[in-house]
Length: 113
Length: 113
Image 1 (cartoon, one colour):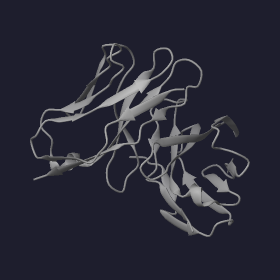
Image 2 (tube, chains in turn green, cyan):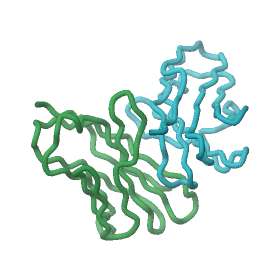
Image 3 (cartoon, helix red, strand yellow):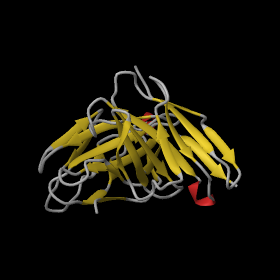
Image 4 (cartoon, helix red, strand yellow):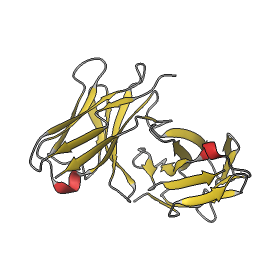
């Protein structure tokens, strides 16, 4: 079935460092891909998405490119801030079979001043 | 900004007891979901609900689980006889359009002793 694999956390960075959080997926067909973010004490919220190969989703300085050849959707940000400290979840929604979003385990990001 | 609210934030119960987890989805949303995350594992889909009935459920959602929308605002998950392995963070979510841009609550941490 569909699945999402994220890198283990926590990822610990200093402010202004470059961020990459890896995500790879297994799915039938051509899924839509998502990154959600959960700030402390809050619910998961959609950060960005991409719906087809080579699409780039972006929001709040974060970017992720839909790479069909490597089945990946890595999240990147050029310069992280303390306020980016959160848990990041990669997810997919298949366009065949079940349309229910499938999530990864989440990767915790801690940014130090 | 409208948000999904979940109560309680923490629930401790004895094995074999019944628990009800409560959620108030965003008022104009029509699709409702329950997910759970066992510590260190992926966020797993349990059930989706639309038009006052279950639209999809996972293998996890067995006869011990039930969902209900008892009035126009609440959406509940009942576990009839809790087991140790039900200990997890339970997330409620809602969406305006099916399976698109889910809005999550901050979760209920269920501990079964």
